[in-house]
Length: 142
Length: 142
Length: 142
Image 1 (cartoon, helix red, strand yellow):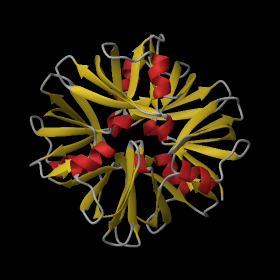
Image 2 (cartoon, rainbow over the protein chains, first blue to last red):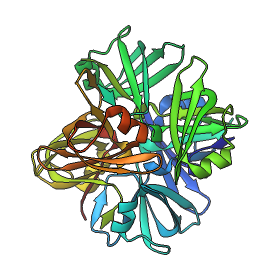
Image 3 (tube, rainbow over the protein chains, first blue to last red):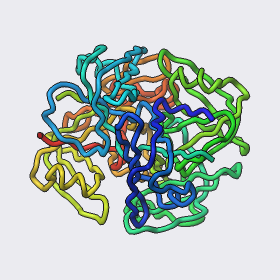
Image 4 (cartoon, rainbow over the protein chains, first blue to last red):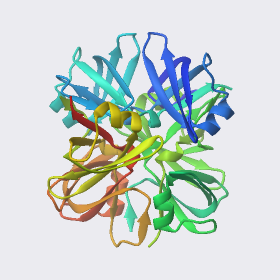
C-alpha cells in the first residue's frame, strides 16, 4: 500500500500509556529517533497496538513546523526532532524542506517561501522539526 | 457564508458520544458516507449539537492523507473514505486531488507532487482518503 | 530562534483551565485579540505555563480556515478571528492570505486558489480566520 504522507516513520512501539479516551504511543525508529502519537483507545484495540509491535507513524509534510537558529524557546509539541537540512524544493508559495536526523531518518516539512528566507534555511543548516503528537496517524500491517 | 475549506460535507448527525472534555459526532452524508468529528463538549452546547440535527463537516485539503494500491495496512484515522480519483490539479510543489466516493461526495486532498507519482494517481484510480476526527471542524446554521 | 510557522502570536497567558490530560490556555495578544490553545498537562508543567506568563502561540498557515460573506453558520472551532484581508500571494495551487485583525495582528492562511475565488477574497474584504485550539503550538522563552 502506498500513502501520500511524505513522512512514514517505521519503528517498533516502545511505550504505550493508556488514558480514558486517548492513548499515547511511542515508536522507536531504526536510527534511534522516537515519535510519539496520540490515538484513540478505539484504535489501540482495532489495530492491536502493544509494546514490541511494529508500526508506522504517518505525518503529512504541512503538519511539520520547523525551527532554526539559537534555541531560545521551549515548545509544547511532543515531537522535537533535530537534524540538518538536506532537501529544499521551491514552489510558488511553499517550499518542501527535508531535515535528516542523527539516525538517518529524513523528516519532510512544507513551509512558506517566506519562512525559508526568514529562517535562512539552506543545505546543511541545523533545523528542528516540531510535530504535535495528535497530528500523527499510526498504521500497522493488516 | 463561504468557507475556504475545500471539503464541506453536509449531513445529519447520526450519533453523538459524550466524553469528559470532547464529544465524538458522527455525520451521515446524503450519499450514505459518514464523517466522524471530535469537538469539545463546549462546542456541543454552543452549537446545540444533537442526533438528527443538520450540520456541515469542514476539512481543509492538506489534512487529508491519501492511500492507493493493495490494502496491506490498517490505520488509526477514524475516517477512511474510499473512492476513485476524479480531479488532479498540479502546482509547483503540491497537487490537489479529488476522490469521488460511492455516494457521490468528492473529498479533496492536497498532497506533494512526489506522492502523486509514488501512488501512481490518475483519473479513475482507486484511492482512500484518511482524515483524523480531530481535524474536522463542525458548522451548523446560525 | 526562528520558527517556520507563519503565525507567531505573542501574548500573555490570561486564563488556564486544567483538565485530566489536556489544559486549555488562553493568550491575550497586545492588540486585545485572544488565542486559545489546548496542550497536554505535561507541557503545562515542562513549560511552566501559568496566568501572567508571556508565551507565543504558533499556527502554521495551512491550518487556518477562512470564512467570508454573511454569517449564516456557527462553528466548533475555538478561535474565530475577524478582520480584513491585507495580503494575497498567489501560487500554482494555493494562495497565502493575510487577515489583519482589529488589534493589528495579521493572521496568515494558505487556502486553495479555488477557495479565494469562491470566497471573493480581495484586499479589504472582511474575513474570519478559524483555528482549532488543538492545532496551536505554544512556546515560552527558554
